[in-house]
Length: 478
Ligand code: HEM
Image (cartoon, rainbow, N blue to C red; front, side):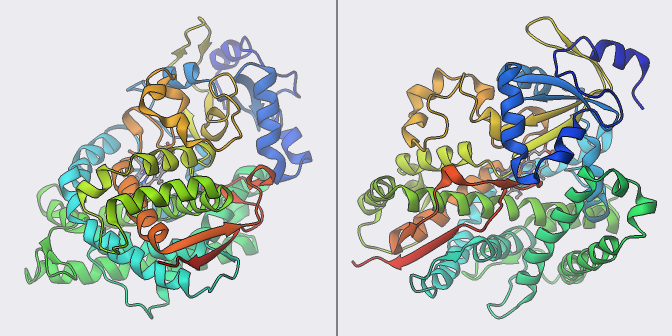
């Protein structure tokens, strides 16, 4: 329940004259189709200049897409608490780095950041190439039939995070990864239902519903999978047989899970601590990357001239060779860099993020968002804010020409969020995406009948189109 101070200060902020308190703006959202939530919020943000205040089920909520407001919030070192809706994924991810706060989050962030150092990531490049090569075979086996690529890319990205971060190699015929990918989709969908349905907010009521039973079954699949990975690695680690992971090329290296196991000795991490981080990184490390790749492939398929230009760049680097990309190769892919950035602009896999303020935030225009208010940052709408982006719905990789980027507001483009709680896996994700597109683009031509401007989206933690995007994959004639 917000304090009187919060309500008093909050009521001074600009916003629609909605029904006050309990339902507030939620009332409008209940009456519109869930697929129309983004356009609805976009319209309201345009009306109020990129930020408005409203009550959402009794909670004072500021909704924003204005980079000036976002900068004021994300640069704070004190406002690091996530919004209350994140608790609905708490049964799955517990109190790992994504959901934790305060001292616990600070310690974890400090402890885990070195695992994402560029040098360590470079060591994992071979594993990324191997993973995308396998995915390429599956894509080519579709023989030009238009298919939904999400499950195929999801499995590809999961195989990569399993091997590169957990040292766990999934066999080709191992169906558990498909099962895991599908359970992640269901678990995030069902958790989001609890955000929008006031009855399901209470654990007591939720636990009486059939949804809770199917959710528990999915959690069983998710925890069962990660539990097995941890048990096997721990057994090897305890016996000191295999302190370093040796990958398919025979190279020895320590993976993220080994770092956790090592720290469990030094820093008193118990089994639950390890478990919550493995669950967090398995989820965050595959779903967002495969979603990003799905939209990227859609944009390439929809814009043949961009696809050809990106392909030509690959040819200049590799000729007709299908060898794995090296660090030097990747540094030459300037146009592909721009294509990836533009795709993440139009389709950021994490479309919105939510914060609960623990201290007041002073905005550049002098207004104050009070402590106790929730702030919903619509990354996807920031990326399409016409004040900062010319012709915002058009796919134009040239926008990311380095000289043009320098002139733009730094918080107008935040696919990985920003500030102290930005994405810890950002470099990993960009490396993985670049290797993935390079592998696929050199071997295939993509086409689609999807018109991205007609797409509608589901309101989920990870961006998902309301209807599957169908893409046809053809082998390139060399
Ligand atoms: C294209 C791919 C990715 C995108 C767009 C993305 C985006 C984001 C965003 C927007 C956040 C902030 C979430 C919030 O405030 O609620 C975040 C946090 C996080 N991401 Fe990513 N991410 C991607 C890939 C990855 C990968 C590959 C990993 C791990 C290997 C990862 C691990 C994490 C973790 C652990 C956090 C929480 C960080 C913290 O709270 O300190 N992400 N990501």
